[in-house]
Amino acid sequence: LVPTKYASGTFGQKATNSVIDQKAKQYPKWYTKSRVASLKALSDDTRLFDCVGLIKGVVWGFPDTIYTSNGLPDVSDQGMWNMATDKSQSFSSIEPGELLWLQGHVGVYIGEGKGIECTMSWAGKVQVTAVANIGSIPGLNSRKWTGHGKLPFITYGNAPKPSEKPK
Image (cartoon, rainbow, N blue to C red):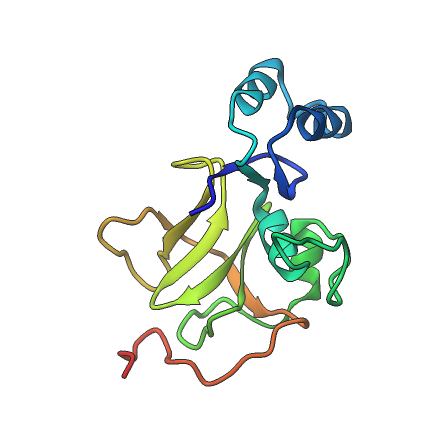
């Protein structure tokens, strides 16, 4: 597994001093002295993401990331939500690959009641969490999301629904 850490404005860059300094200049309110010091203490092989940066990084081809490739512009979490279609607040028909959304934060539904997100909460990194709207899962932190929707750059199929057992 690749070590990860939450850092505002990032989409999978290595935790190098130059990347951290660049982001600290770009987002000075978020990059406090203590956060910068903590990030600079990470090994260079640690990858930095924020919530929407996790999605952008993967779509842009992580680890060989090509900025704004594969039909995805550089958007904020709200911009990503604005791109979504077939939005719903009911989680009974959610499909793997759908965007999970709440004000100020996004993740992706990966199936079986689980989402993947990069968050400062809990472990402060990329992590699998339970989608509390579907139910809790022993051993996973749970997050209740406001809504979900389909992203235009993902092809959706006939994956099992949350209430179905995989065959």
